[in-house]
Amino acid sequence: MILLTTLFNGLAYGILLFVMAVGLSITMGMMRFVNLAHVSLCMLGGYVSASAMELWGLPFLATLPLAFVATALFSVALERLVLRHFYGADDLTQVLLTIGLVFMSVSAAAFVWGPSFKPVDVPAWLTGRAAVLGLELERYRLFLLAVGGLLTAAIFFGLERTRFGAMVRACVDNRRAASACGLDTHKVFALTFAIGGGLAGLGGALSASLLGLDPNFPFRYLVYMLIVVSVGGMGTILGSLAAALFIGVADVASKYYLPAAGGSIIYLVTVAVMLWRPEGLLGRKVRHA
Image 1 (tube, rainbow, N blue to C red):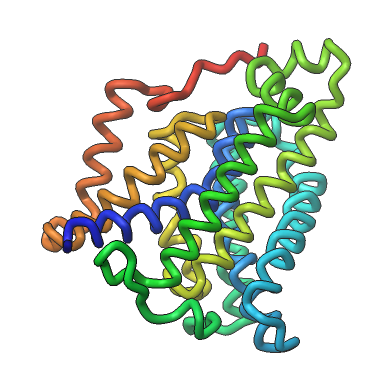
Image 2 (cartoon, rainbow, N blue to C red):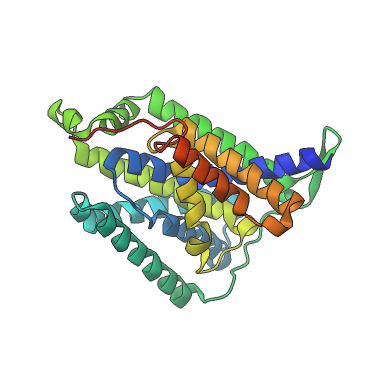
């Protein structure tokens, strides 16, 4: 029973990591842009949700689309005003720029919302436990699995069965060739940033009550997002999903069964995967020239 409960908790955590990190995987795979500030968008979504409930009295579920839209709009503004000017820069410049944005976001969040943890209340029907197949499972984690499953299906359908998804895949495979074929890559970039940023904000809103919300949120989960992207492979949805679920289960299981080891196991596995497949489990070498 304990093993199944641990597996369930790990899968719920993993699906949450996937929602937060999938936008980073796509934007890095398509633009080859190391946007470490993606994790700050997760924090922003959490604060938008918490503030909407506190100031306007909106119910929790109503704040989720608000967090998506607000973060999507902010991410487009960030891409248009700042990030687009550094697309041709080297990796080190992009890392320094975006890690600077992370520090700025941490300071801004502490100034606006305060340095302490911000409580996020979920509806009563999402609290407590429910009996499922003889197991006592947390209702909120069941909710995360359901929402995460729907989002995963929507992302897969959007990228594999729509015209916009075909344009995104074309840009991932070869940006210059896609542009030569008449695709407006700048518009594709902006829309992709909006969707990826919106998903990050939604993930942050969903995670606030489970993971905690404070200005140091980006520092705590930046490494996890980078592991999801690097292990799964940039630009691959299935790879990011597999990596996020594995990391979620491994992290929860290691902290339960090997608390002395902390989270070191997932780092060891990450190093092993990178030595075996530098492009990630399902990643491909992307050509942009």
